[in-house]
Length: 468
Image 1: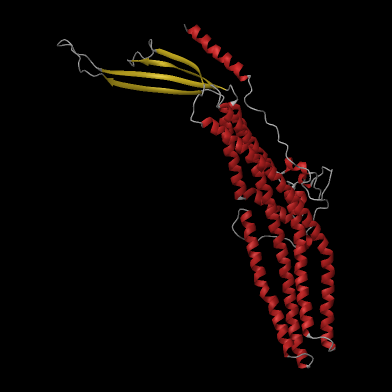
Image 2: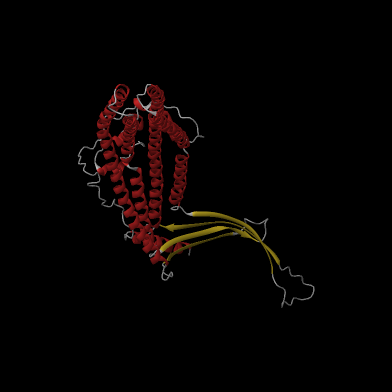
């Protein structure tokens, strides 16, 4: 009898193997997303890209390197991204164990009493209606992966795990860019504060000069008052610059995972940009941009969820077995008390209130959304590369003209001051205009240099640099 039953179970397994040869799920292939022309007005066949450079080679400032390393070790967002990886890893591990049968143990004692109503026993005969049953058993269950349900679940979990790893790398590249950009902003503010302080000293001296010229009847009282107002215009901007410096230091401290504090730094003048800003080809974004990789893994997970939804339309084969010992007497527990059973069966869904169809429709729709997001991530990446390149180019273009503008304004201030002292060919309004224009140009020159440095950072991040 046992041999006959085993043959039936074996026949079910053979049938399952035959059914599994009928493909229900599909094999993943990367979709054909558009990568041509992502870099506006940039055509390059050279695969060399600065994205492959380690961040230590991109940034020459040693103090900036220390800050970046500290941020990579202490930043809270990066730590949370690592925890997301651990959570996804646990899910992946569980999906792999789904191939194995479940196993559970059960030990119990049952005390039962039968009803004596309606029972007519001879007088003097005592019938004990209380019984104890002692039971110890093991049970197991295993589902055969006929249609690829478990395989699809495992691949979906793997894609999610890889997606969290890509997300962590995306956080890392963004963190490096944020630290560098804030650092350069801090250096630019330092430079602007230094320029403004020097201008204030010059304007204080100009006020004294105007007072002396008024005593010599060269200028009138209006010129003295205007010079004082010009001095205070420079002085009043200093607290705002100091506030911006303090806030930028505080923001940088948070990126480092520290309480707000002063940031040790160098100067804007010693910064050096990389000699070669190679961008490679747009298709390399698929391998270099962590957020693009994350979007593809999200699509792959959605693809496998669609596979999984298809499998619910087909029968499932489950084998269950249980066995152990059961006896009414504890002292004779292992004597002639063995029991077991083995069950194998196919379950075919017939009517499930539209659940399977709804599950498939939802999964297919989510797969389309994931594909759209994948393509969108590439478009955004191309936009960021194009913007960073153009920002760098325009910053370079401005620097030459800005240097000439500042040189001309320095001469203008000198000339108008000389004319004011020694002739009546001009008045203080001309000096005032020249001084104000010079300060504005000097501050703008600092902004131009900051734009160039931050454009390099943005380009490096846009190409996918910082995690290799």
